[in-house]
Length: 325
Image 1 (cartoon, rainbow, N blue to C red):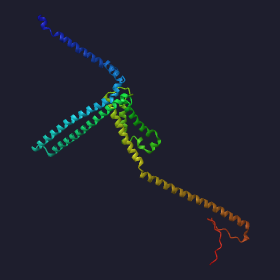
Image 2: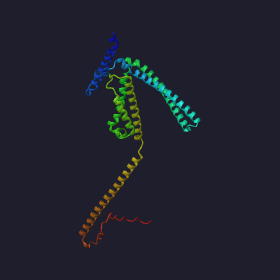
Image 3: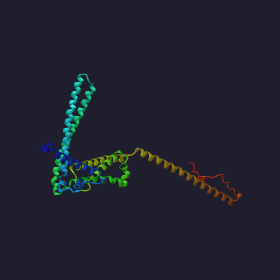
Image 4: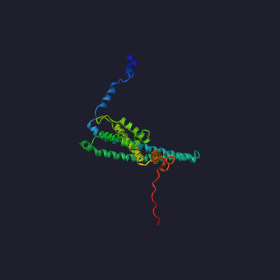
């Protein structure tokens, strides 16, 4: 009995040591796994994620996401109220230290500025809560139509919206007429188009593989926001490109005017040279004919000797003068 009383702690200590040893061996085995090897827990999680989404969950996905969005907005309001209280306390402390001549008036002004910023953020968060409540009501109103099949599933509707944006963008990439009229929509150096391409890349990365892909409400919210940002960025880029394309380019018109003036001057010079060449050829033929006529008539014909040098234009026939009145 005395031996048992003295050595009673051996059993619990051995059990604890065995448990710790088993945990250490398991961690060592997990760390020693080759790259790419998965454990049973990882395989179970992937198998659950690869399962198709149930019909009930797919129908309620938009509503669940809207409720999660509302909860996030309410948390933002709570944080905003706490920030306002902290900023208000900072203003009171700065005023007290100013009264004691410990700080300057700039410190009080800075504290009041932080309070104004916190109050503005709180008002924005409160407005966001009202908007999220409206989103929850809209999702609840759409739920009966989705259940009856008259409205598409939320994921299908979002995928169609994303595809419509991509189709609008590809029209500028594949249509030569649009590419010529609006070159900014094909120029990746344009800042607005670069913003759209970044938003599109984010949305494409969050896009589910199909309508049956299992999505959590947070994942649906992230993809929905990414699609909305992509659409807004594309609208901004398209408006800017069309505004530039519809405005007449003054520099372009001046350039075309200079080109047209140069072409007209070149044409006039070419016409003058051709007329001069034609005149020289005609004068040569006229002189040759005059010389032949003089040779045929003989030296005693009393003909007038031909004039030296080319004569152009030929002398006009003398017309009888009208009788004097």
